[in-house]
Length: 165
Image (cartoon, rainbow, N blue to C red; front, side, top):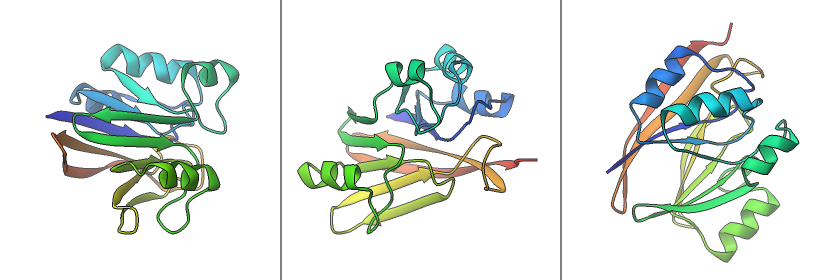
């Protein structure tokens, strides 16, 4: 079993609560808009980090992380993209990737809207953890944690980190 902490849209912000949850995970996944190398370095000190770059990320971050990250965790195929949309409203790059080979788990960020949806057409679970940073229009800072046990995605939890102000 692999315990995952999923966050996105940190926009250069990280605090002790995020780091505390990171320490409880086996892996940290970030859906883009890190905002700074400092966020990446702090997370990488704690656990292995997988992610994608976001639209605000600079050339250095873009050289460290791909636009689309496809990987397998245990028996679950994962696809992560920062600007990916959601079931029924996928962005063109996400739609093309899903049409070529649908993952079991599709992760996006960007919207700052926490979302969990099952796409029946493509038989995949979509997760957007919202935003853990303080930049943007969201009011509540959020992340998610869950476990992957073989082919099963389970124990999904929404973590509210508090108001952004």
